[in-house]
Each structure stands twice: as C-alpha cells, then as structure tokens.
Image 1 (cartoon, rainbow, N blue to C red):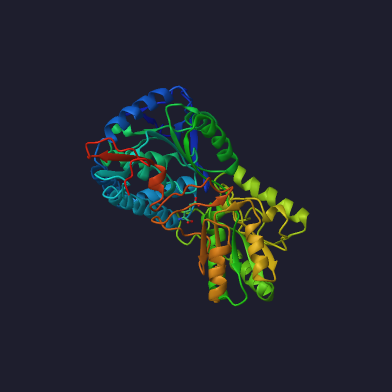
Image 2 (image 1 turned 135 degrees about the vertical axis):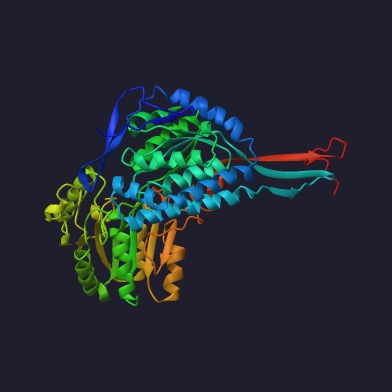
Length: 496
Ligand code: UN1
C-alpha cells in the first residue's frame, strides 16, 4: 500500500477533509507509485488562513536579519539534502538528475541571497523641502501570500517565491502542482527544520480547480504568486483585479534562438540542443523556435537533426540519459496534436515526431526530440506554446526579419542570438521584445540573483529573483518626522 501524505495546516500534519487522495506516479515508469497526496477541497482553507494570519503577526515583527537566519539554515539544509532532493524530484517529474541537481542548487542560491537580503531590504531617505524635518521610505510586509507553483522546477520555482516572501515577513499558503507533491512535502519539512515558526507556512496539496481556485478567491489572502499557463494566469488575474490582490504572474513563452550566418555554428548547435530538449522542452524558457539565416540553414538543420536523433531517452534517474519523459499523458498528446497541425500547415517533421519505439520506454510518457522544418512565421507551430521537445525551425534572410519574427508572437520571456558581430549582439539586447536576451548562450539558464520574467502575455510586469522580487513582497511606506516644533505646511510654508 502506498504511503499517504498529509497537508500541513495550523502547525500540524493533517489528512484532507475530503478524505480523497491523488496518486503520484513516476512519469518514466508509471507502474512506480510514489505516494498518495491530498486532493484538498476548500474546507480547511479558512483554518489555514487564520493560522497563517497568526503566523504573520509574529513573523512580521521578527527583525529581518533574524528572519534571514532561517533562510540561511534552509539553504544549509538544502545543500545537505541536495542529492536526495534531486532524486525525489527526478522520480516524480522525470528530468535527468543533473538537471534536478541544478534545480535544487537554484533554490540554495535563492536561499542564501534571501538570507543576506535580511540585512538590506533598503528604504531611502530624501531631503525634506522643509527645515528640521526628515522624509524617508521603508518596506513593510503585506500578510498572507498564496503561492501556486508548476511541476517543471519542483524546488527552484517554489524557492523563488517562498524565500523572498518569508524574508520580507509574510506568511504563506503553498499549493504545489499535483504532479510534484513529494518535492513540496520535503520543501516544507526543510523550512520547518530550519526554524520557521510553524504557522508561517501552510501546505495544501490538490488541484488547481479546487484548492487553487479557493486560495485565489479567499479574501484573507492579499497577495498571490503564480507560475503556469497564460490561460490560468488570465483567470487568476480577473479575480485578483476584482479583489484588489497583489499578483505576480509568470506564464507562457515561445522563445527563439537566432543563428546568424557568422556564428560559431558548433556552439549554436550545442545551445539549441540544450535549450530545446533539456527538461524535455518543459521550461518556460525552453527554445521552441529556431531562426536560422539562409546561408547556413540547410547545413545547420541537418546537423541538428543528426544530434537530436542521438540523444538518449530514458529514466532520468539512470546515468547516460539525456532526455526524460514528459510529465503526463496529456502533455504527450499535446505534442502529437501540434505535430499533426504542423504537418497540415505544410511543415515537415525533419526528425522525431512520435513515441519512441524502444520497449523499455513503453511504460513512460516519452516523446522523441522533434525538429519541425519549413515552419512559416504565421503557422500555429511558430506562435503557440507546446511545452514539449518540439522545435520549430524558421528560415530568415536579414537580421531585421529575424527580429520581427522573434517579436511578433504574443509571448516575451527569453530570446537568444548566436553571432560574432558586436553590432548584431547589442541590437538584439536592445530590440528583442523579451524579459531576457542571451548572446551566444541558449534561451535557458537564468541565474537566481538576477530578475526573471517576461513581457506581453508572459507576465504582468513583475519579476522573480534578484533584487526586484523584494519589491513585490513588500509595500512601501513613507514616514515624515518633523522636529521643528511648528506647523510647517508642505508646498506652502517653504521659505526659500
Ligand atoms: C522555468 O522555465 O519555469 O532559466 C524556470 C532557466 C531556469 C529557470 C527556468 N534557471 O531555464
């Protein structure tokens, strides 16, 4: 009988009121049942919010440098458990161990950054226009934050949200993806072991349509941070707008790597293989379009297909595997649907395009690394997010054309250009409509201490990571201290 996991509410591990559980299975081998995780309804949310509010009362009054020590301890524990956490994440999510180790490392980096930020959280002082008067701003925590996270980075993405939220003095209600609940369980255990006061974190497992929706709609939760699809983000945005909630959205992408004819083509090839097929294409930052300049197009695509074919598919826990499975059956069906659409639109499947034939892979959600050639910019395969190992190749003539193609999609997370030309490099940095542009590096690989996010339908103006995220999790307050002993009217009693 598989182990039954629990929610964490009001300082205790508790079973869901529904009595219902969701099976968590290894996507590389679906016969491997990892555990049963709560399918939570809305019933325990009021208790979780009330507890988180009590947690907030206490935690928000704890000095920020002291809060930082808890984040430091969390970073130390993540470091100590890096290997077993990576294995936990790979088993339930599928990507190869090297990548889940990187995923945990990103959380460690985020924890240590947050720890130090406890001694910063800078405000400002500004000169007052009046004599004997001080004017200053500082940052205050907000309250309870609802944190709703996806499956593709089971440790890093929750850490991007949870660590800064806590460092700023907020408490959190955490609803992880139902596809990676075991990593979330371990994450909360580590926070508690690090010394976080119990009521500062509540863990509610379950589905987006039930407990996710209830969190979004709960009036006692003034802030939300969500990473997931643009469609779900839009629906959350409508509710948050109506209820005046602070909201950070991190959503879809259709990221392009541009290869100019003067580029180091071997480097560009390595880049696109990693960008398009790493994490089985399931990153918001994954390369899903490859724009290649005419002169080098045919040679480059030929080499790319050869290399894509030699990637080894398999269980991410095994050594020598390059590409793990997709997360579930629906993800694989989506890839298949888009390949059929691309064919109808006139593109050709240059390599891949289906389920691998090897019998050892029959029990997992595997899909071949796929290159679609001859994709035209108006094709759906050129514009819509597929979230799998499916790369659409588009050819172009001039750099202006390449930039137009990059910029004409409704998303704007990351982009990349391979060139040896300094003018082309800096034009790309300035002109590509994305939150992140890489020069001579793939579209993936953001570092934890820089702001992360995208423009257009990818986000709603906020950034995760780096210094900017601390603005999202705090409210600015301004204080004026007048020690003149007289009534001084701003704008009126200015005597100069
Ligand atoms: C995501 O795709 O959701 O830049 C996050 C990267 C990683 C983070 C990706 N550091 O690819």
